[in-house]
Image (tube, rainbow, N blue to C red):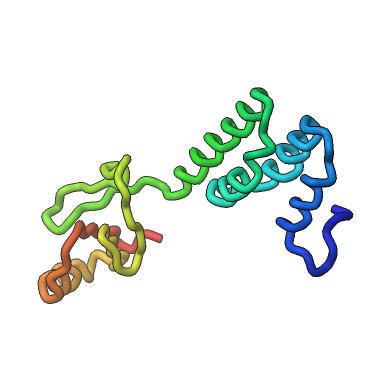
Length: 145
């Protein structure tokens, strides 16, 4: 963008363009095609949508932007693959069991703990859970990567 100088952020360049373009429809087209279309992550997209939503005036562009948002939200929600592993009692637990709930995922130490130990270390894993009085759901993934 020719409005972007070396010391400017991309947001400052966008702001300049939004004030430079006088025609509302042209401004909307620029916003959708050149600003919002470039973002592939849902959170980043929402940041820019929120920042420039005052420029979205026509129904067709609002519909298009809302569809972009839905697509990115769906894409970002599918990043983590589903898995199923046995818990301490041998009951199978799947990540999809928690659909619609907030789940903090981590493969080190979290509320849904996933052990990546080998089968030969299963007893050590069970003992550690007891010794450390770990709460939450524990599953054994048998070296899954």
